[in-house]
Length: 144
Image (cartoon, rainbow, N blue to C red; front, side, top):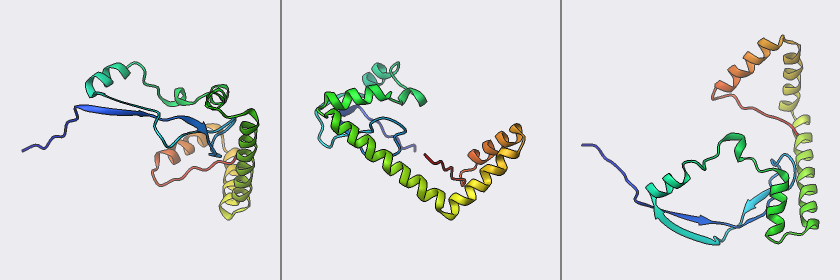
């Protein structure tokens, strides 16, 4: 006997975009979602999948340009001063994290590794990095 699960409807909730504080945002203002939904709708799963099929984005298509993020938060009511303050705060946090990483034992070991990697022929270095990415137990790190 095979067990199956099926869904007939899905509920979509839309949340406001607000100023964020995530230092992983590489440049510009970080954004996040507010806590309270502004709109909710329920639809059939098959209809939803059909409507969204050509709208799906992947990889780099999901990255919002700096101008778009800035416009989103300003349209939501943030001032230019608030945006600038958040960008400066996030930049400071990013710098502090990079400094912490660079002064840690792990950071020093990574610097030595990167120096040795740079001395290798490019093909070998590239294959070595690919091998590391395919290993589930290897953790990648980067500094800002």
